[in-house]
Image (cartoon, rainbow, N blue to C red; front, side, top):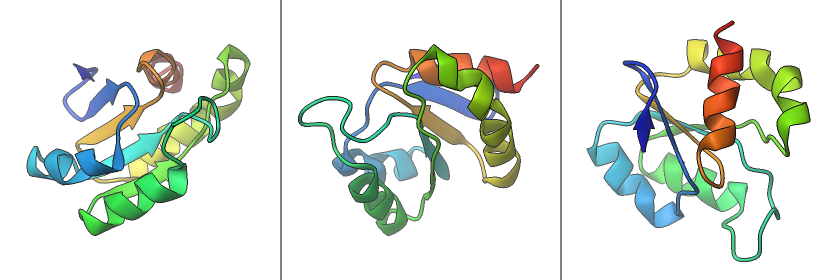
Amino acid sequence: MTQLDENVWVAGQIDPADLPALADRGFRSIIGNRPDGEEPGQPSWSVIAAAAQDAGIQARHIPIAGPQDIAARKDDFAQALAEMPGPVLAFCRSGARSGRLYEASQS
């Protein structure tokens, strides 16, 4: 996990079983930036969102398939950050897309 500001962190793919520990660490929201079906064995967004709800964490899905989607989705990401309680963890396969999306949303 990498902290980008006082309220936002990014990480690689999380597992539904990670959600209780993330809640224990104080995370109140997650944003999934990975499209479903990107890689075999990847947990689906619906399973992650259900686990988040069970852990008391808000969840929003803003999938980014590649660099071309960052400009198109940066406002959605900024809105999610404004509306969701922090701290927020955004994730994708490695955390890189989430980090680039965060940077784009701040400009």
